[in-house]
Image 1 (cartoon, one colour):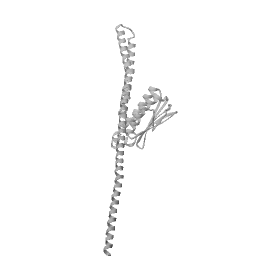
Image 2: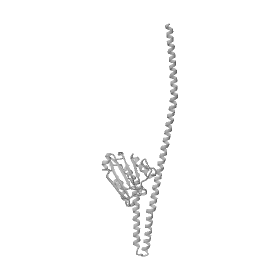
Image 3: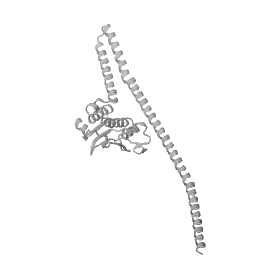
Image 4: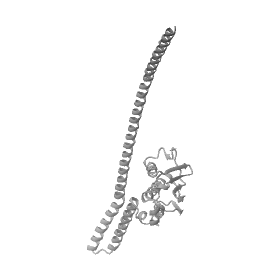
Length: 286
């Protein structure tokens, strides 16, 4: 009886082991059938997302490159127009005035001096135009005297040229920015002034420049007609000008905010502390 009992135990154990192995094998097959397709799906999804992101990055890079090219072409066209309509015309007038004065001198005409004076006046106009163009391209005062002096000069020349009442308040500003950040803020102000002159119909313009716990802040406010379609702080119909301003701020991890209504527009440019010079260089600059 004992022998039969042990045989039954061994038989039951063998059957249980066989069933367990069968269950393990079946479970392994099920897990493999689920895991392998899942891994393939995840891998395929990751590859598709990677390709999609790469295509988007390539598309944005192409758009940025095209914007840079368009900006260069627009600037070249503007300079060509300024040179042709301003300096070139003034120099041609000087040439004719000198030729006329020479003929009058040779024929002993009494008013030759008047003609020469007119030529000198036209030449002075050409010199002023050259200075204005060179100032627009890169104002030396920005490198020599800093951002505050450059913005004050910009406001003065803007008011003189357009007749728009322009004021600037920089009493709370501490100039500790990197030269590149100074240039970025100056270009933002310059582009804002151009937009005010071309589109706003404003009669007053105010610039405020200050430092907030070491962070540079600047606002440009006008009382013009404003514009619609602002999205994410930048006008949806703005074109390249406001996009360039936003990208200049984004380069330093700053922000450009625009609040526009029927009573005027306020542009706010904000730079972080990382746009400042290191502490050692700040002491040297001071």
